[in-house]
Image (cartoon, rainbow, N blue to C red; front, side, top):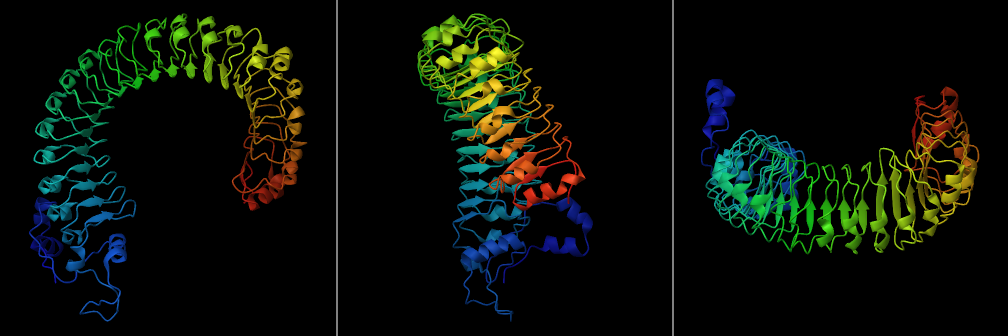
Length: 558
């Protein structure tokens, strides 16, 4: 049988004071032989499933149940046990040849049994309520250690783990990176959501190619200036005012610096491998020194202080550009970005001239509007690949342009001041599959009758009282008419494929028509909260629920 440390026995019997002093102290050396006690039922079941010989018996047992032996435990070289509810690792110390161990998302508090597993190369312990991490200090062969979400307060225990190539200590309370200074083999490092302000100890980690630092208190990124192997860098949600120290990091492929205090784009030039750049929620007022970004495909400039996109004309490979919530009035720079697929310019209140968009023959998505802006859509005429157009909280003088867009399938016009003439013009785009006119002051959907290809239709917040042509849209899957004076679902039974309906906060008092749709059943959904349904509708509600449909309604109808 295996020998046991004396301290736990004394704690259990007579010496609580000693326990308080010695809680989580290093365990005494153990000897693994014979049967191994693994008290945690989930861990024991897993190990038995992997290791136990169904013909073997414990010498003292008459149950005939298989046992775990030290010899069988020693044959384990890898164990994956994520999300099993494991709370106690006792017994695992006898798996002395483990090289990889996965215990993420369990209930583990005490990891001392891992102290003896000195052959470990990879350990995954994320999302466990671990109290102390000191036991890991002896695992000097570790190359990968994942402790995200385990409440790490200090990383002193990693100072001697010089073989580490990947370390994840996200979502902790770390404020001192000093112990990392000697870990020169590190290639990837995850430090997100801690209390870090000083990056000085990282200055010598020249093998780093991936560094994640979002959600900290970093203002000075100077220590990163010589980390020339960096390819992936995440600096989101810090206090950085300048990216200039990154000027020499020519290998960067992805840079995220959203939600900082950055005022300009210095330090970004000369990075031909950079593919994705995130700069939203900063204080950038002008775009300059962007030369040499010949591979940039995605750029996010949302929520800055831009009035013009001048400077972007050199980004000739750009495919996705978002610049929402700025003060942009001049988009001339996009005229030469012939590869653009997605362009989001919503919430720029002075933007009305879309002339530079006219030549973007590969454009697939365009987002406009916000704060009542009324852009002229004429430059969009004939764009061959434009599939989705969003004009949110805005308007235009002529919606007929949409009929000239052969690929247009999705049109979203939320809160647009539409009238009958506008609806008639929109109805000319008969290939539309998604239309959202939520918030428009329309009372009659009649002009939209030709849109028989619609699959997804939203008119929430409008003034309609009836479904009108909706009952003839036989391809419809999704119908949203919440917050309207709609009085009846009469006719919906002809739309046999509809599987999501929102009539919340309407005047509808009867859902009997839905019972006529035999296919409205499992995984389908009706939201009727705030409607006029009452206890008298419970038979219909229960009938739909018995089919497996989800019905949300104020009468409980249990």
